Length: 246
Image (cartoon, rainbow, N blue to C red):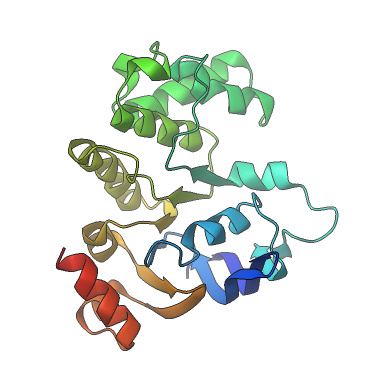
């Protein structure tokens, strides 16, 4: 039976008087690929940032293997090493090569030696097809290559779960496919993933669970077949009709 990694319980987030997330509840188990879909401004990215503690929830709880990550005294650095994040804007260090980008976190956070970090980095750069570009700086490679390097960097930390925040939204259309292919391969390898995405084909074909958000709440949550073929909520039907008929 799959082990529960993350439990999101009654999570809310407000910025001043503006409430962005309201009473969010769901769980992520080992091997799950959960896609979070919804219109821009529905709170999807804020939810991911709360889960990775880049934002502090206003109320509610996030449990990692049953332990609250928002409790006083919890170590966010060790948690973030296990709950990796891939950003839409890549967030690579521009003054470092692709290989150095994939080594620095391992050395600083995981305290690996340089040789061990390099070996691990090369393994994952090979997995995403980026070894030929390992000595390039970010400015010398395409957006799709930057995102593949960012995925390799996250994987080199040996995360238990990867969070993807709209990983293809900053890419030119012809580069989207190469990043989605890497993500499909990770899913096939059993990587646990939580993906905020506008790529409906990916959500439909690769996900084990789909969460549809609207106005800061989870409107509907289920398997991809029921969400895409037989959504219960009118808001879900309206959203999918707009997106799929674009």
